[in-house]
Length: 275
Ligand code: KIV
Image (cartoon, rainbow, N blue to C red; front, side, top):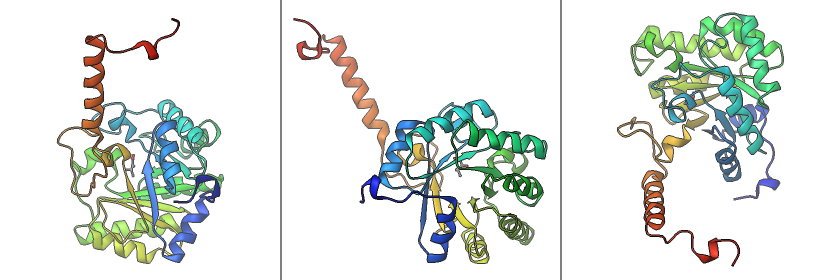
């Protein structure tokens, strides 16, 4: 692995260049400075400050409750810990849907206060006019179609998208329209793999970022807590590959600490000050 200082900074332009070369792109989520630094050191191309923070950091059952202020604080922490990866902030529920003005103001906050280099906005055809105006203001946008968790109640649960002709047509039209207005990339979440492959092939410039969308996307993204095994018991979607199981590692460390404190073994002389 090359040292972080020898690596080039990833920008939104790197996404199109990598897509053109057929080079896969890696994306992971982070919500704090320390984990962001580790992902960056390992060489991930892009760090998404996902509104999944609502679930995996704040313990809510959906992404709906998280606010702009909380997301800006997470984004600023991630930006402070990142040198080379592209930092993208996820615009939370109702931070961009009400009007173009609200969308521009809130997207701008992520760049001005959060240090993000781009924002992610959920939604297909219906959000395209808003996304176009945000991009025209100089704010790069990552789109997000398929199962968009901010609309979970409208979908009636986490259902795989692109199963019938009208859903496929809507997804393809949305992807083409998002590319047309200048999205540099777009997340394809929980889609039949063949639909994601067709969309990826149809897009000339915008890179597709799959999560539960099969192997043909230009990029892949996972929620870092999930792929490290720091997830709620029972949460194990088919698309999730667990690269580490940190839960028993942490529980074991804490159990040993508790025992040592109770037994008077921590701290010892070397861990104490004075004589
Ligand atoms: O919020 C998030 O983490 C996301 C990714 C799963 C794409 O939107």
